[in-house]
Image (cartoon, rainbow, N blue to C red; front, side, top):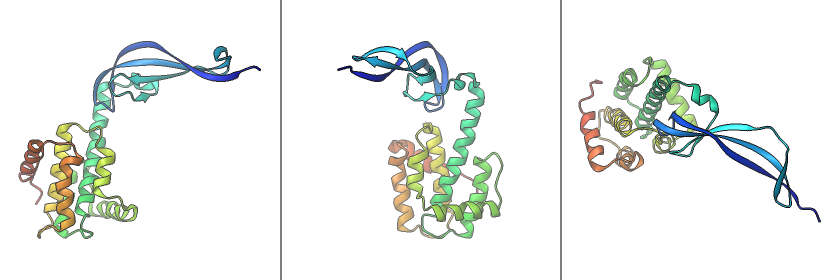
Length: 210
């Protein structure tokens, strides 16, 4: 009885350095090729498809299209900074909505926060659309932070925490239990030490958003 099957053979073609978007820093990369082969008695015999190439980061293990090697590190860092600002601002909006009601003070604070985090500050109408979308999608601030904060640096985690703390405290009244629990959970969600968390909260007090 003939034993016929298929197997993907992967080879490393070259090594070099690149800026890994996941790691957020320079890493060694492996340019790899992968091609499917027909096997006979578990031995690769005939190629049955074209060669595919991909780049693997030796640090985090993430795979990328080879086009990433053509992107200038400075341009990539700039885009990552823009992406972080958008993500941190949305986290601040979701934090303000944690109680289910957003106050006028929080709206004004979020508009000012947008000037610190976004390439172009938003207006009240755009903020209203963002809040409406958040209500409809029912994504909590905690789950959103879990989803997007992986690539953030420690400094970015602290800065995002400041934005969320300011958005919550701008309500102008005693914080509700849901918001207090959220703020307390952010140290673990953002993987900050007690000292890093405390420093960020203290720095948030100096934000001028009123």
